[in-house]
Length: 313
Image 1 (cartoon, one colour):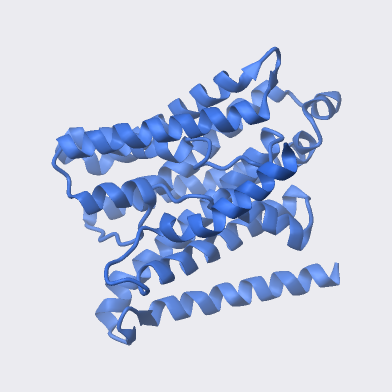
Image 2 (tube, rainbow, N blue to C red; image 1 turned 30 degrees about the vertical axis):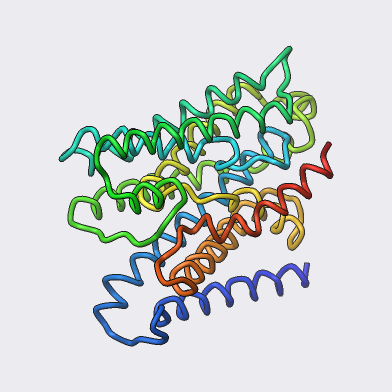
């Protein structure tokens, strides 16, 4: 218990240190310009904190709910489905400020519906089929998104950043209002999901165990899919589809503080926020142009995914 408290203390300490460093450090070194800090760096830190935290939180929920350690919003195609929804939202032109996040949510719901139903056979979900279906739909939605964006004559960098994640957002009065509303709802949904931590502990032990304890699996899975899809969509609508955060972070959190979802969920959020902020810091400083965040997270995510795949075959 004492070791856990020490780990939690250092985790929060390093998060605060990282936020301060991200505020003042950029491609040209340290800068204390008030305009740069408040209008450029602070918004991307807030976006990175919420995006990384929500994706890691969603990954932890999916891994417990589907009894599959390989689950992740990106691998299952949920993030790509949300990006596809954002692309559809651009068809509404001036209304895209308000409708793109809604379309992102519908796209994520569509993705998880297809993936889950393809992998569900004879009353159970096949773990490998779930991953294969997710990868297939992830590629499909990403390709369709790129096609949409090209026909809509969107800049190439905007297409890449949507599919692979980026925090370089400039808010106007419309996008800021939508961002605040979406994240206010997301915080409510995070609290609701946290209230189902006991059910997730049971699901991680097996569907039969959960049902023997009187938990309605079908009702819980529909509710948590709905809430998780919204969390992912609300971040993809602004930060794009960031890969592997939802895969790595829940495992790392369990290693640090144990498998109880009452601890795993909040600290997956904190650790996920840290990882995305670090990836963003690297992405905007190591190259002549700003890299998509998924370029950085993939270097860590792919070896970890292959390790988990090998372990669970």
